[in-house]
Image (tube, rainbow, N blue to C red; front, side, top):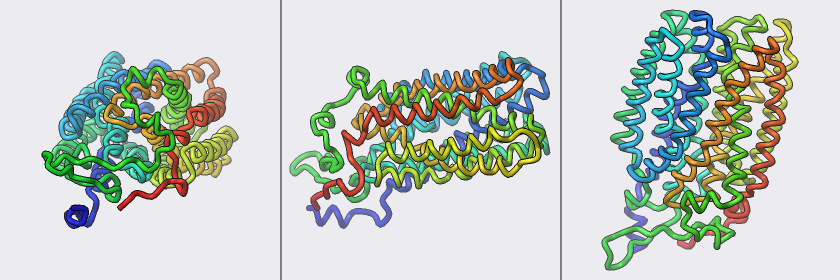
Length: 440
């Protein structure tokens, strides 16, 4: 039977097709979020609203995203990607359509919130939960390559800025709406699948499976060879059970701290560079370079599968801090090279970190309710991100400078690393050479 099962396996494990579709979906989804930095400048110029009240739209987007995260996780657990992802794309499209018609700040808040509903359904959380149904030994690598899409979404700043220059920001929103609906809906409705076992395939394409003799053909995965705390891994984790553990709240605080730092930087970097006297195109280019260098997210996931989530995360934080120190040294237009130092270190290192938070949560709470648990835990990222986006604008408004705001991100990132070490996913599932080999 084992020999027959091997004969039926495809040459290319379908899980990697799931990764590729996820990459495309995340690219488009996060282009709609990360491009806020360039739309932010255009909207400020047209309406003359304060930076804090305009940046509040991004905060609302993140708050809605956070509040819906547990629901999105539960929906992906229940209905799967072929229902959830097309619905999310349509909602994103409606939000972008509304943003193209802005006339008052209340509309900016309303449609930013609607956009967040769609992003929540087609975003990082639901895709991480999906990929954990296809990979175990290579989970870090799989999620790492999928979230390259987030980095590619970040690179959208430059082409969108050029589109705004050629047409205007309203037309740019309409183009984004067309892309989201026109590509994501058919791609995910046709090609996505929920579990490896739905296609009678083994986890990772290598873990092996057994068809129960005399049964209805239901597939049972072999035990996860990475588990070192068998008592913990044997628990069927639900959200109420997870919330009673220290690990849930340590991961919650890790994501909260990083959420403040990341989103303060993402929202205000373009405005900071423009304030220093550089052109909008150069500012958008730097921001796009950050996104492009974040393509190493696949490498970050791969490395974490070998040296551990905690050590990889700490090395990434150190690199980001080097980049932030370079940015804080820029005072005028005489040192553009420091902007590129910032972009290289911050972009590559934050890209390497992107998959690690969700991979760590999957290591700790893997199971059939994992999407729900991930979503609930990720409330912290949306909440922290909302605070960070607003805080950056507020600190600028009271000091007429971004120095204090960007300086704050360095201790926040350090604290996030400490929380991940305390959560210790390595004590539940190990990586690298310590993994026992699967029987064949």
